[in-house]
Image (cartoon, rainbow, N blue to C red):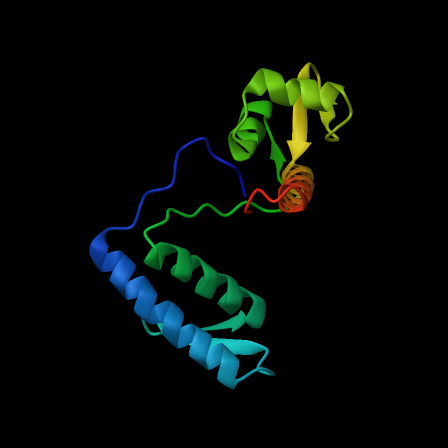
Length: 150
């Protein structure tokens, strides 16, 4: 699967409504059948057997669509360009390159081009978010110690 630079399309009102109904029903079915490992889907006179993980991902995708969000699927082992990685982190490409060169995020080089694994970007993002939450907790604790009403 390739990663594209094209933004995903936002669902229209009818698609969002249908996605909400489908996500709700899939959630109910998954909750009521916790040990079921496969699901049978009948589509255009064809029966498909899907693994439970695919059904769970479909439910999550539908839940996002129901909220009006566009969705992109990226394999965790996908290699991204520096621009794609920067877009995911919501930083500039030069800033991302600095993070790569400083060893903050692992990368490989193909000729002169840097490639970053999607999972490395997500790991960095999770670590950055965790550090931000810890700093905010520290600031909140200091504000409480000083009676600032937080």
